[in-house]
Image (cartoon, rainbow, N blue to C red; front, side, top):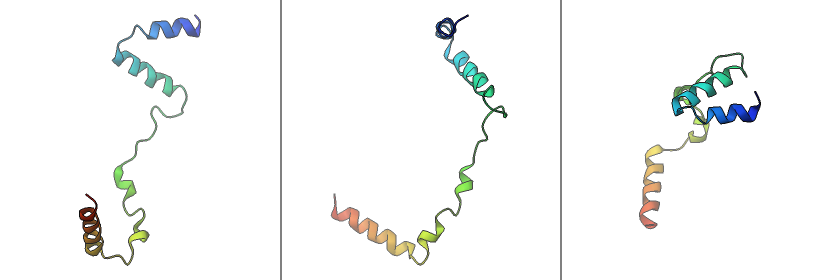
Length: 71
C-alpha cells in the first residue's frame, strides 16, 4: 500500500478516529506514549526579579490613569 492510498483511507475516518490515529503515529516517534504535560504552576515566580522594588499599587494606578487618557 502506498502513502497516497493510506492518506485516501484516512480521509474516510471520523474525526475521533483520525485523532486516535494521530496519537498512535506520534507514539511511534517518541519513547514516551505522550509528551509530558506541564502545569501552569511551573511558571510560579518566573520573572519575579523584574518586579523587585516596584510598588504594585502605584504601578496599577499609573496604568489605569494611562488607559483613561487614551480612550
